[in-house]
Amino acid sequence: MNDRKSTVSRRTKETDITISLNLDGSGKTDITTEIGFFDHMLDGFARHGLFDLDVQSKGDLYVDCHHTIEDTGIVLGGAIRDALGDKTGIRRFGDCILPMDEALVLCALDLSGRPYFRFEHEFATERVGYFDTEMVREFFYAISYSAGMNLHFQILADGNTHHVIEAMFKAFGKALDAAVTVDPRIKTVLSTKGSL
Image (tube, rainbow, N blue to C red):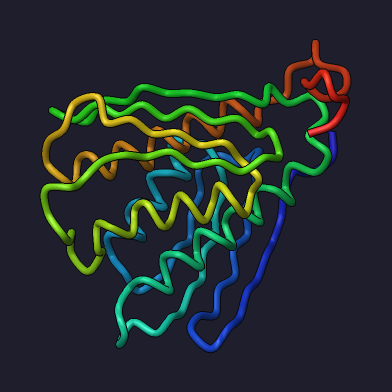
């Protein structure tokens, strides 16, 4: 099996982002987005997915957090797509129901190559630290379209906004880990079409 690693950079007038991802890592991280809560969430995603993740992101935070968070999602989705290569041998589907105190979150995904995102939830608060909670939707939407991923979230039990969002990031990490796992019984790609 080839190394499933990728480094992707994106530079615009609004952001300058470089992400390195190793799908076969151990959960090591080096993350700097200048948004503390977002750093914490990305760290949880990588540690619970057992991915090595380096995120160096600078954005126009004097405007707000939107461009930094959305563009980080775009770059992370591209890194996932590139690290997967032709997807030979992967399980393709992954899911996780993850509790965090009173909150309970379901994440399910399919690395089909066809982007789709579904998430219907209104958070109780508008902000956690310097992180606007409406950006949760924008971040995961950006990942799903950049990676070519069908991604669903359901909040099965609501609660503290910090807990709900943290459960989402960790559930996403665990579901993605399941989907990218190589199964020796799968000799090509897991698709009746012959490609993903």
